Every structure is written in C-alpha cells, then in structure tokens.
Image (cartoon, rainbow, N blue to C red; front, side, top):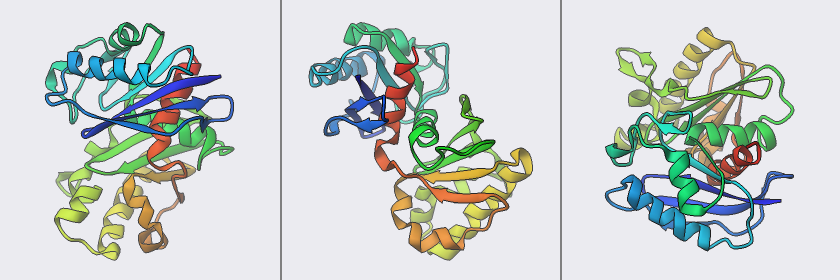
Length: 245
C-alpha cells in the first residue's frame, strides 16, 4: 500500500508516496514552498494541494512537523508561525485531506525511518538519532520503540545549548573546519552517552553529505554511523507512522 508522507520544513513542505511495506519511495518527491506566514490555515491550504497531487495514494496521511506533538496537538513552533502552539495538527490534516492522519515531530519521523529501514535497522538496544541542521534534532528508541518529543539539542554544554555550539548552522556561521566541528560534535555525543548509554548513534542532516570529512574524526564510546535516507527520512517516517494508525 502506498501512503502519502509529508515533511514540513522552514522553506518547503516535501511530499511523496511511500511503499510502507518496504519503506521506500513510490514516487518522486514534490516540494511546495512553506507559506509566509506559516499559519495553520495557510499550511492546511498547502496540504490540500499536496494531497491533490498524489491521487494514487490511499489511506492515512503522515505529517511530520517541527514541533513537540502531544496527542495530535502542536505544543511548540520552530520555523513556523507561533499560532501553531495549541493547534490540533492531526485534525487540520484530516480536514485538509479527507483522510485519517498521523501528526508527529519531524525528528521523530526521521528517526522512525532510519530505525525501521535505514541505518538503525536490525540494531537492538538503544538508538539515538541526531540531525544537524539549523539546530540539533533528536529521537531516541529502545528496542525499536520511540520515546517521542525529545529535545536533546537544548541540552546544556559549556553554558550554552548544544545546538548553539555544534549545529550545522553554527559550523557555517563560525567558519569551523571539519576537525574543530567534529570535536564539538564529539562532546555532544559524549554527554549523551553519559546520560543514556546508547548502543548506536545515527547522525543525519544535510551535513552528512560530508561524512568522509568529519565522520572518521568523531570520538564516541558508542558506534556512530551516518543516516542512510537523507532528506527523504522525514517523508518515509511520516508515512510509516500513518501506517500504524
């Protein structure tokens, strides 16, 4: 069965049909500009257009969103309008598409994809996924079960939030070379290990395209691997979440 997965970003909403039985894309990825301001009503209009662009999909829709999500309600708003706080995102997607909807945090969606069909597949124990972009997104799993809405990017390191020291954006703004940035990321991994003792770290985000430049420089008590699904992880994970409704 092919389900529609949608991943919301600050600049665009990306969507594709996903073969959820195999965890692979069943269509090209289409990109739709994120409206400005990205209010719930404006985003709903884009979701309606997206659904109309994938007539071959049936069943529930998965919607990954940059927010802490509890029982379908957006509790925070990152890179979207603050009017999302308190909005019933699951109902919004249901009404925009006429289908059941799974509404979940975007990093959780990406982690779900990597654990089920990507770099973490087959790994028992505890897996932590960290995505390095504008901030640091996170998702943690134990024996395949997600603990939702972690915000490890806000963990304190040297008097600052981790993402203020080691995000992909900080690397660019401070013009850090790969060895210096790898040291900061290693410090984040070390602190995470002290707290959670994971068996595996999966690192994602656009910066992973440069894995050969920094991956071998990372130091961690746990094994560290690059994410496999790239920018499609959120789409695939959203659809996989929808398949569980």
